[in-house]
Image (cartoon, rainbow, N blue to C red; front, side, top):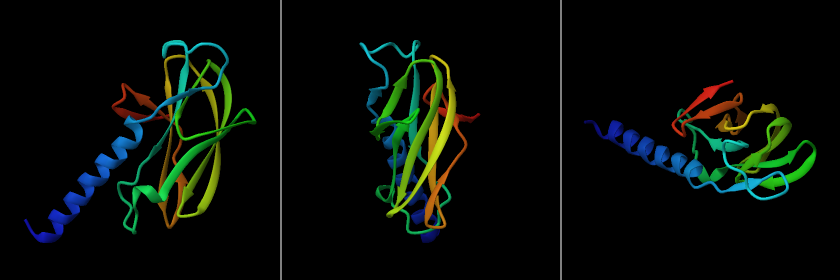
Length: 143
Protein backbone atom coordinates (compact mmCIF):
# COMPACT_ATOMS: atom_id res chain seq x y z
CA UNK A 1 0.00 0.00 0.00
CA UNK A 2 1.47 3.40 -0.92
CA UNK A 3 2.38 5.67 1.98
CA UNK A 4 -0.24 8.32 1.16
CA UNK A 5 -3.19 5.92 1.22
CA UNK A 6 -2.09 4.40 4.54
CA UNK A 7 -1.89 7.84 6.13
CA UNK A 8 -5.37 8.73 4.83
CA UNK A 9 -6.81 5.47 6.16
CA UNK A 10 -5.24 5.99 9.59
CA UNK A 11 -6.51 9.58 9.68
CA UNK A 12 -10.00 8.44 8.68
CA UNK A 13 -10.01 5.73 11.37
CA UNK A 14 -8.87 8.12 14.09
CA UNK A 15 -11.46 10.73 13.07
CA UNK A 16 -14.22 8.10 12.91
CA UNK A 17 -13.37 6.94 16.43
CA UNK A 18 -13.27 10.49 17.78
CA UNK A 19 -16.60 11.39 16.17
CA UNK A 20 -18.13 8.22 17.60
CA UNK A 21 -16.96 9.13 21.09
CA UNK A 22 -18.62 12.54 20.86
CA UNK A 23 -22.03 10.86 20.60
CA UNK A 24 -21.41 7.88 22.90
CA UNK A 25 -20.33 9.81 25.95
CA UNK A 26 -23.36 12.08 26.11
CA UNK A 27 -25.18 12.75 29.32
CA UNK A 28 -28.85 13.70 29.32
CA UNK A 29 -30.37 16.89 30.76
CA UNK A 30 -34.14 17.06 31.14
CA UNK A 31 -36.22 20.00 29.94
CA UNK A 32 -39.24 19.33 32.13
CA UNK A 33 -40.00 19.32 35.83
CA UNK A 34 -40.24 16.25 37.98
CA UNK A 35 -38.39 12.95 38.12
CA UNK A 36 -36.68 11.51 35.05
CA UNK A 37 -38.99 9.58 32.73
CA UNK A 38 -38.11 6.60 30.56
CA UNK A 39 -37.01 6.99 26.94
CA UNK A 40 -40.35 5.56 25.84
CA UNK A 41 -42.11 8.52 27.52
CA UNK A 42 -39.82 11.30 26.28
CA UNK A 43 -38.05 12.44 23.15
CA UNK A 44 -34.33 13.19 22.96
CA UNK A 45 -32.58 16.05 21.18
CA UNK A 46 -28.97 15.05 20.55
CA UNK A 47 -26.12 16.98 18.93
CA UNK A 48 -23.50 15.43 16.66
CA UNK A 49 -20.36 16.38 14.75
CA UNK A 50 -19.78 14.89 11.30
CA UNK A 51 -16.90 15.74 9.00
CA UNK A 52 -16.10 12.72 6.81
CA UNK A 53 -15.10 14.70 3.71
CA UNK A 54 -13.48 17.82 5.15
CA UNK A 55 -10.13 18.41 3.47
CA UNK A 56 -8.89 21.36 5.53
CA UNK A 57 -6.97 21.46 8.78
CA UNK A 58 -9.95 20.10 10.72
CA UNK A 59 -9.53 18.90 14.30
CA UNK A 60 -12.55 17.66 16.29
CA UNK A 61 -11.77 20.09 19.13
CA UNK A 62 -12.19 22.99 16.68
CA UNK A 63 -15.89 22.26 16.13
CA UNK A 64 -18.29 22.67 19.05
CA UNK A 65 -22.07 22.44 19.24
CA UNK A 66 -24.44 23.18 22.09
CA UNK A 67 -28.06 24.06 22.69
CA UNK A 68 -28.92 27.71 23.32
CA UNK A 69 -32.65 27.67 23.99
CA UNK A 70 -35.81 25.60 23.79
CA UNK A 71 -39.04 27.45 22.98
CA UNK A 72 -37.25 30.72 23.77
CA UNK A 73 -36.18 29.60 27.25
CA UNK A 74 -32.38 29.72 27.68
CA UNK A 75 -31.08 26.16 28.02
CA UNK A 76 -27.35 25.96 27.33
CA UNK A 77 -25.79 22.51 27.35
CA UNK A 78 -23.65 20.27 25.19
CA UNK A 79 -25.48 17.23 26.59
CA UNK A 80 -28.42 15.60 24.92
CA UNK A 81 -31.80 16.92 26.08
CA UNK A 82 -34.84 14.92 27.19
CA UNK A 83 -38.22 16.58 26.50
CA UNK A 84 -41.86 15.65 26.85
CA UNK A 85 -43.68 14.99 23.55
CA UNK A 86 -44.84 18.20 21.87
CA UNK A 87 -43.87 21.15 19.67
CA UNK A 88 -40.43 22.67 20.19
CA UNK A 89 -38.23 25.36 18.76
CA UNK A 90 -34.68 24.13 19.46
CA UNK A 91 -31.94 26.73 18.95
CA UNK A 92 -28.38 25.45 18.67
CA UNK A 93 -25.02 27.17 18.40
CA UNK A 94 -22.09 25.91 16.37
CA UNK A 95 -18.60 27.28 16.89
CA UNK A 96 -15.85 26.46 14.41
CA UNK A 97 -12.56 28.11 15.38
CA UNK A 98 -14.42 31.10 16.81
CA UNK A 99 -16.79 31.53 13.84
CA UNK A 100 -20.21 31.16 15.46
CA UNK A 101 -23.50 30.34 13.72
CA UNK A 102 -26.96 29.64 15.13
CA UNK A 103 -29.76 27.53 13.72
CA UNK A 104 -33.31 26.86 14.90
CA UNK A 105 -35.01 23.50 14.40
CA UNK A 106 -38.80 23.28 14.73
CA UNK A 107 -39.54 19.80 16.04
CA UNK A 108 -42.82 17.98 16.61
CA UNK A 109 -41.25 15.62 19.16
CA UNK A 110 -42.70 12.14 19.60
CA UNK A 111 -42.00 9.92 22.60
CA UNK A 112 -39.32 7.28 22.06
CA UNK A 113 -37.53 9.16 19.27
CA UNK A 114 -34.04 10.70 19.21
CA UNK A 115 -33.83 13.83 17.04
CA UNK A 116 -30.25 14.39 15.92
CA UNK A 117 -28.83 17.81 15.10
CA UNK A 118 -25.70 17.29 12.99
CA UNK A 119 -23.09 19.93 12.23
CA UNK A 120 -19.98 19.89 10.08
CA UNK A 121 -17.29 22.34 9.00
CA UNK A 122 -17.04 23.47 5.39
CA UNK A 123 -15.22 26.44 3.94
CA UNK A 124 -14.01 27.32 7.45
CA UNK A 125 -17.48 27.75 8.92
CA UNK A 126 -20.19 25.69 10.58
CA UNK A 127 -22.83 24.04 8.47
CA UNK A 128 -26.07 22.49 9.74
CA UNK A 129 -27.58 19.35 8.23
CA UNK A 130 -31.32 18.79 8.10
CA UNK A 131 -32.78 17.26 11.23
CA UNK A 132 -32.25 13.48 11.47
CA UNK A 133 -33.62 10.65 13.55
CA UNK A 134 -31.09 8.45 15.30
CA UNK A 135 -32.26 4.90 14.64
CA UNK A 136 -31.27 2.17 17.16
CA UNK A 137 -28.17 4.22 18.10
CA UNK A 138 -26.65 2.96 14.82
CA UNK A 139 -27.61 5.19 11.92
CA UNK A 140 -29.14 8.53 11.03
CA UNK A 141 -32.23 8.99 8.89
CA UNK A 142 -32.97 12.44 7.51
CA UNK A 143 -36.46 13.80 8.24
